[in-house]
Image 1 (cartoon, rainbow, N blue to C red):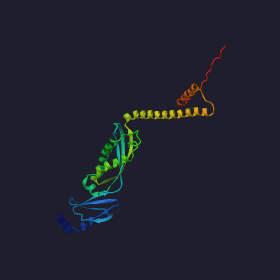
Image 2: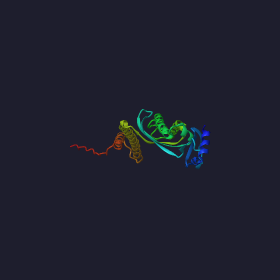
Image 3: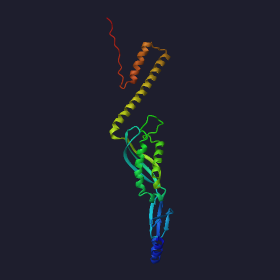
Length: 251
């Protein structure tokens, strides 16, 4: 029936053939349908022709595109709620799938990206004390590969190739941000104190050793007093206040 209609219209209205020309733009592919049936995909730039009766053209851009995944609340592996958003770089590499297998490939990617980022982020901690353990804060190669792999599997049906996934915003949720800041400050203070104590012990050891080398050995009691005074001065968070012991003379 379709071919009969095409022949009939062509015989009765020859000028209609002029409407069969169409242009394929750079970085674009055109999926051609005839009476609802897939015919071919034109990838070559320039002018193409196909009989216009019953023809439908689905234009698909193959340019690189970016998707901003809006911020959402995700619970990391340790149960901490975090705000996270991301940027996805992708392009359509299979035009037939993009045009026929999904209603809107870009909307399809948007819906899948949010779900995948939530799922992958929940498998890693926000931050880790172990250097070799991957965490969201550092966003190492393990997490990036997991995001790309999971998202690629989800959008294969739409003919999309994922090129890159990067976190755009990554912070603790407001309800725990203050508590986590206090925790980070406490850990930083402990590390600083450890560094000060280690340095103070080294300085005191060097001072006692240098006095011995210079021929000024101290008695054990005086040595203990010197060590105690030096540690107090070096480890104190305030400026030391020197004092002089004044002993009243006996009459």
